[in-house]
Length: 166
Image 1 (cartoon, one colour):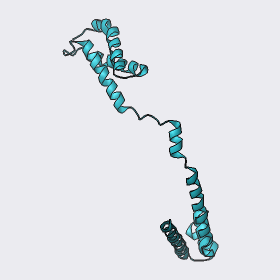
Image 2 (cartoon, one colour; image 1 turned 120 degrees about the vertical axis):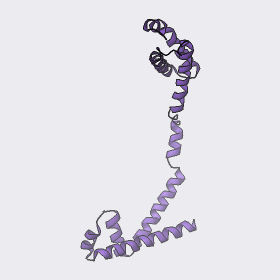
Image 3 (cartoon, helix red, strand yellow; image 1 turned 180 degrees about the vertical axis):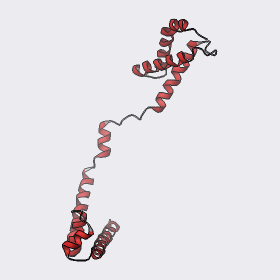
């Protein structure tokens, strides 16, 4: 057990021990300061505990454990900016392949029968409903769904065939 006066007298020395223990355990200066403050708070809360017969040892142990907890819960270090850029930006070859794929797909869409092409465009690009498309085309809404499904199925088949060739 420690009285308030005894704690106040020992606090500067205990804080210094906590700082040293945190730094020795690998904490940087700011983190060591935070850990020393947390250590002092915990020692204050334990001041009436009869097990606190050696506050210096407790201060060092608490500080070391706090550093370990801090390192365990620390977010991963960010990658070097160059690494992030190289991981996220496509290579020139990827860009060329993507453009070729887009051109190929646009050509396949243009080669759809005119009605299917128009319905697919209104649905995918203009985001029109089946009822709106039916009114514009002068057909039944169920026919819109059927023609849209045919267009998508045909494109999917051509994409699969293209994938098998590559």
